[in-house]
Image 1: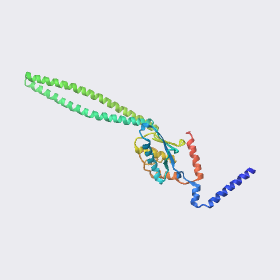
Image 2 (image 1 turned 90 degrees about the horizontal axis):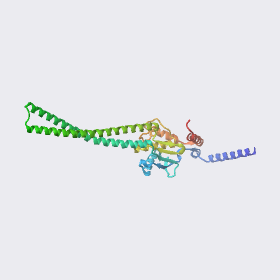
Image 3 (image 1 turned 135 degrees about the vertical axis):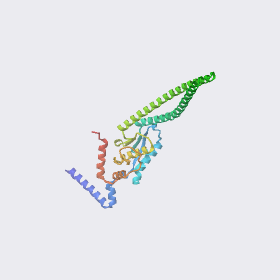
Image 4 (image 1 turned 90 degrees about the vertical axis):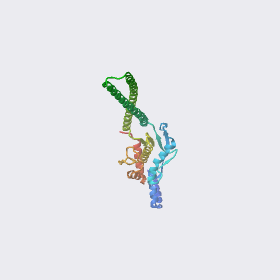
Length: 304
């Protein structure tokens, strides 16, 4: 009982001190004392892993990250994110199967395009020579027919006709060889087309299994980006994951940065802005504590 009495006395003194402090403060000061926003302090981020297969330097990647951070910073005109080599939020560029498949597709597309460009003039030349050959054969046959209708040819004319016939036979050999070469090239081209289509199919399957190009791992306070197809899409993905790091969920607006599927949108919609303003509004200390423990529960809970 004695210990309880002392505790009650201490609590009474504590609340008296709080009341005295409160009495000496104006409304704004009271608000600042008991209300707080998650966005009052910037989230400091650092760059950790950059897989060299992306062929992107740290400075280049950091430039893209800063552009993504600026998207949110500009909405509220305050530093929501700031770079710090020792920052608590880790940002990483991780090379996985999807990026590998994307690189293969680009390589195969270049090979197919190159093969196609090489085949076009060869096919045109073959068609031109074949047309000329067909005309020569028709001319020779007509001339032979004309001579036959006249009762025959002189020995000199006969020798000339035989010589032309031999030349056409030689041309036949050259055209056949050219056709075989084109056929082999066409088979290689078709094989590359099939390989490209198979790779695209595998890539699409990989995307359907893991549609996100990036992810925010709350329990580790870590952002991982898996695909780098182009700058706008990379910046969008980084901005999207930064949004999750702030506590912003997905929205249904297809034009929004926080839409569930990746795009190249880098301008916040009103839906994005509303979500950010809600996350950053001032809350009571008790509400913040409830949210904090709720977020902890989400971070460390496992799927059922």
